[in-house]
Amino acid sequence: MAGIVSLASVHWRLSSILTAQTVTSINPDTQDFQWFSLPDMATHIPDPCQYWIHLPGSLTQALRERTEAFSVQVTDERLVDLVHPPESLASSSPSRQFWSRKVRLMSGSTPWVIAHTLIPQSSLDHGLQRLTDLSDRPLGELLFTTAGVRKDRPEVARTPLGWARRARFWLEDQPLLVTEIFMEALINHEQQRLSTLP
Image 1 (tube, helix red, strand yellow):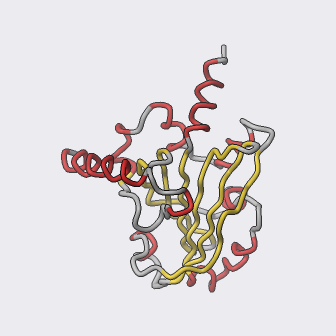
Image 2 (cartoon, rainbow, N blue to C red):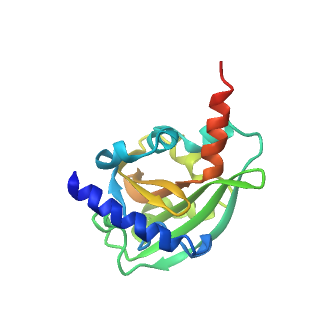
């Protein structure tokens, strides 16, 4: 565990440097963040973030339950070539070309979550091409309403935008990687909501 803490301390310094970057220049699935296995970092996650990091079900549903003004704002979607894809995808797919989809999950005009999906070309070729036509529909609704979907390789990172989690999903036995960054506005809203409960 000492090694993990040491790596984490290096990452905190990296995060302070990255703070000056714009949201659009941050690519949460490739080079920018230091990711750790969730079981190894569970005790380092702040209490206000624990619920969201460990949420087992649909994030989309959880957000809808907390705001009537939920929407999905697509910020970028396109094919990308990655020389060094995330290990969880590199180990399960020979692809170096990926469908990249970045969205903001919104409450009104406020971003609550920044999400990024990477789908290997091999997954697109084997039944997941329809995921390139989601438009402003949330991917989570499809993942959590489709039979047989499974999830593994949970990881966490501390980023300049907030704590993040990512996991590899298997849809129709094809891998894709979903990253979610929990913004401070969401964490503050949840704390305020909990403070008003009896």
